[in-house]
Image 1 (cartoon, rainbow, N blue to C red):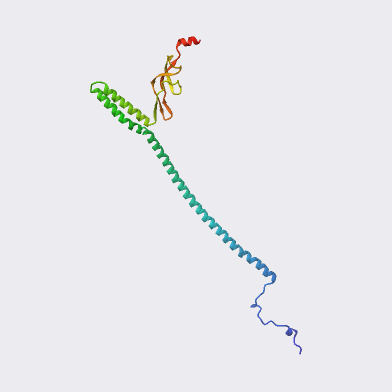
Image 2 (image 1 turned 90 degrees about the vertical axis):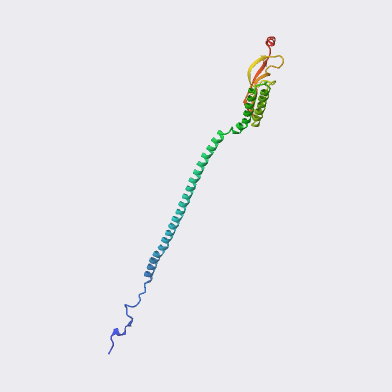
Amino acid sequence: MDKPEHDNAPHDNAPHDNAPHDNAPGETQVQAAGHPAHEVAAPETATVEDEMALLRTQLQEKDAAAKANYDLFLRERADLENFKRRMQRDKAEALRFANEPFIRDLLPILDNLERAVSHAQGGGNNQPLVEGVSLVLRSFLDMVEKHGVCRLSVKGQLFDPTKHEAMSQVESTEVAPNTVVDEYAPAYLLHDRLLRPALVVVAKPPADEKKSDA
């Protein structure tokens, strides 16, 4: 008897349900293209988070540095204001007591002047008084010279309006016109600055010479 045709067909003894299924080439490429897209996104997110954390750290450091600098500025500003007030106070104090050395040197002269007056009140001739006043005058001149004051005698000099102040004029044939023939008070200089001009009498030509010249 002939066997049925289906007996000659090859039989696959492995169960179909448990056999592994190989993906088709096209399907494998699709999955390979899909999965890496998800895997690349994770590192990018981590990098952004790291950068944000770094930026936050840097911002905190900058904020701390700015706060420290501001605190330093406030302290320096307070120190500057205290320095200004201290300098103003010292300046006012210096101006207030600027004449202290001069007055201290003046005190012995006042003592000598009181002694001279006391001698004069004791009676006798006037010689002790003259000697006492002369001593006081000499001491006073020495003291002012010590402080840079110079006394100028201008008698015999030509009249200088920058240093002399004419109090009167007298006719004279012995000296040239505009010559200082007498002084009521001498001039005084403080270093190179004029403290007071000399009060002087200035010569002028006689009236008859003026008429003859006319």
